[in-house]
Length: 120
Image 1 (tube, rainbow, N blue to C red):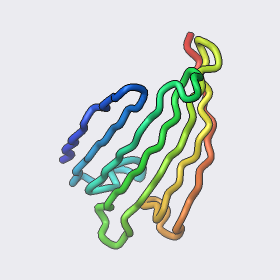
Image 2: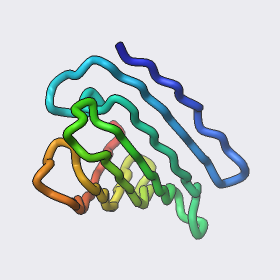
Image 3: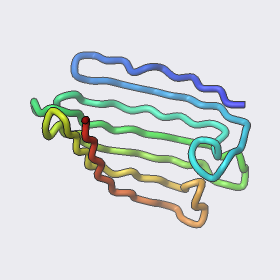
Image 4: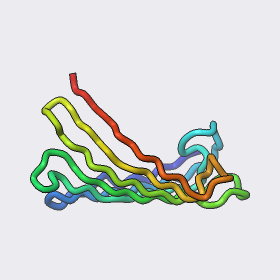
């Protein structure tokens, strides 16, 4: 069983905040939220930073694994989504994980990223 309490984003001017809570009792495969019993994420996004099309965002997360032998996982993400052309987004960023559930032998992982999205 999975229960999700999600508060849609709340916007105040150019600042958007968001939060999400999930409770789960069904352990699934080795990917995603199904490894966590409780998870919380929250963050904020600044729209059109420095007058540039796009957004800068930061998010924080916590998850308690279903398997009690694992440590709680903490995470953070920072990104900048840039509107390069009317049809192309480029999003550099980094994800940081402390005590990752799916890699219990590691205390910390930093995942640099760059994403592209083309609208056709």
